[in-house]
Image (cartoon, rainbow, N blue to C red):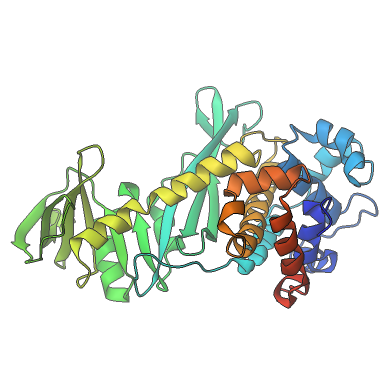
Length: 374
């Protein structure tokens, strides 16, 4: 590996300019530009996200130093406000196919699909099309995150005032076990999930009634603080569930009692508690992209520009994670790096020799060098 290998070069190795053109052609947008094309705008977004540039003005100033064509910042801004963000959303959905599977420490028959949302706000002057609070606008990214792959499965975008619950059904996938928080725990939806064979572990709101509880006999599990393991009807009156559901109550690390409902009958209550704890992986993901991929620093003011930037940031995360997982498992223990350390060393072209060697091997593999997407 050349120690000066740039991230953008690797990005283009996975997603070629021709594939970007193909994705653009699948939309109604006609790219008539000869200089600032969709591909060049993507290059600028990728580089700005990866290097932490503060906006179009700084991107235009620093871009030529990183082998990008010289473009005026107003031209970049105008292009970002013109190109449909659906193009970048489709690109993100394509690049995520290079996710790597990792070992499942819970030994479940299916991978966990962690579903949650994150809110990104900006002054009303910058996001007037998405009113949120008195002086702030805001949007939400509703994310389905694979616990086994440490990466994205699906993403939906809405304004910040949109409720989370309806997106839970949109992001559901019967190939996974859903892990959702209280905002998604609609009683009628639990019955539907059971009817359609969708496995789930969902936290219940504290004020929901549990009717006709019946204790399940389970063996003791060491230090696991299981309070109750029952089957019951959930809710009351017109809002009562039709089916009996399994509810597990346990204490979290702060001593608070957490109630989750699940269709998993063979798993022990301790495993159910561990599944819920795995939900924090998506919180770590949200914190990571906000801290390290320039997400809170929005460049544009239009809906197209804002969502385009965010979907490119998610694309960059997927590719960074792919490269990291591909190298990390083959590097000796004494040379291990965290995901954050890997990104920082690569950003300044200073990866340790052991990582450079494995990086070169990864780039030469057919599943990387010849990546193609339908």
